[in-house]
Image 1 (cartoon, rainbow, N blue to C red):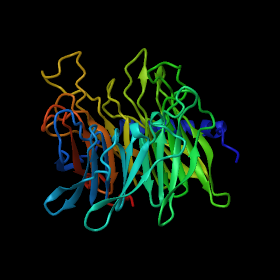
Image 2 (tube, rainbow, N blue to C red):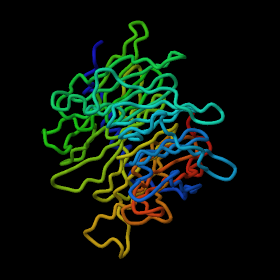
Image 3 (cartoon, rainbow, N blue to C red):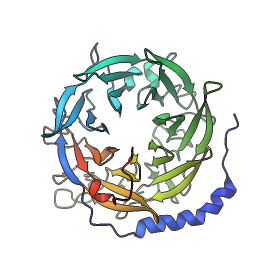
Image 4 (cartoon, helix red, strand yellow):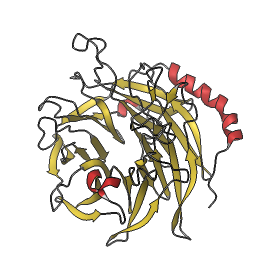
Length: 426
């Protein structure tokens, strides 16, 4: 299938319009929206350096919170608040890297284990969460880190393997499909323009017949540290040939001068819209970060707008974690500095902050800037984010309430930020 290289004329045509939308988003005054904190989640067994909140997911009345030490805790929304329901532990015990990324879709969860190159499917049977399957891509080793990123929607599961053939390739992603009885490996996806250390597969998402995969280090100089401009690849399923075809390669439409965007560092797909986050670096300035919204029409993804921080400063990491649901976008900025004597210059405090943007007729506008009431130095609030309807979940793996960097996740109600005429997602 012919891959779309890009539509330069089209992008030039929309460039002026998008620049206007961007300036509107930047200048728009914030509303008096204040997300309401519902709960603070610590994990079932948090302790020093557990770093709860490294990965989070939320869907309907369930939330999952993962730690760096291999704990994944399921929480349920009850009349008494969000309560621990169960710790999800594989039948044979948690392997190395368990909880590296998590995805939740209704009563099914997918948990990656990057250092073990596999992922675990759990299902809720009405009483408890039970392990249903272990997804182990064929032909990959633990060095490939399959499960670094995961995505789940319906009968499709995606495992990103960004270090596959790291010195000879760019990474990959593996598609699994559930046939009603078994999860079967369907296809290995690789990028058309992949090169060494691109980290294709570091972010993934799926919905219906669309898959999107980030390669945030594409365009790298070959250094041991990431310094790429990044790209996102879109795939579409052909039901006749039963194959996933690459249909488009997206790059940062309006990068800031002197910055290496690492476009595709995080992403979230919801219907015909795609939110792409960045984690830029620069050798001359300290970048703030950004995020882009794309809209799919007729099989082509076009940029709708660029989202920027209304109050940003260098090193914020705005866009390094993103979530999208309907007309609402949630963006984390874990590098935001706090103020006060506990964080003297030039120490980077990394307290963290989060932003709610809402799509209205005039475009996307910022509606809320918020952080935790008990925010402290190096909490990394906004390291991970999740959004489903009125509920938002935000990871802060550096929180010290249960021990040094034991971590936590916060649950908020953001419905006050969304005008009644707009959608709250599916």
